Image 1 (cartoon, rainbow, N blue to C red):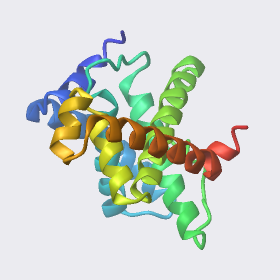
Image 2: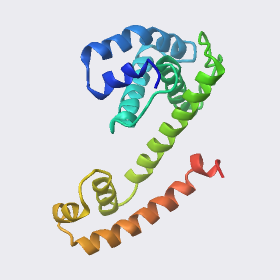
Image 3: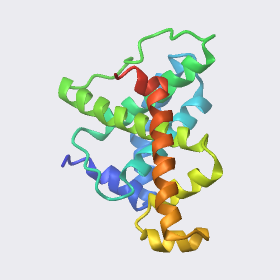
Length: 188
């Protein structure tokens, strides 16, 4: 566990002082990076907030262990988020390297990239899930929690047997959709 795990803990516990510390330490760096790459302060604020929300979601189950400096991880997540925004705009080429002003040890960057890849894959799966029909979406989301499937079936007004059958069908459909997504297609 890296000593910067405390930043992850701040996010997990919604510690307002800790979150203020994160903004105090890293917001200017993120703003500088975004401004050097066709963005403004508002873009940087949005990217930083989205990155912190993603990191919170990644760590919400309490099992996430930071193995690199938080700064390297946060900057990597923000870089990727901003790069995706630029790709979507496509009219705005990246004018400078997204590495402006940041140097990390190779191991730190490799670790941060690995975690950022995982985060991007998880977000993509959730985006694909949102495109599915409401029945499948509701069943899969409900089954992501820690509740027993018998209770989930009751809450959704389904029989336990139907829930299991439908969940299996929905997961197969989600698997096909995810495999067809360009992010996962390029990994094959």
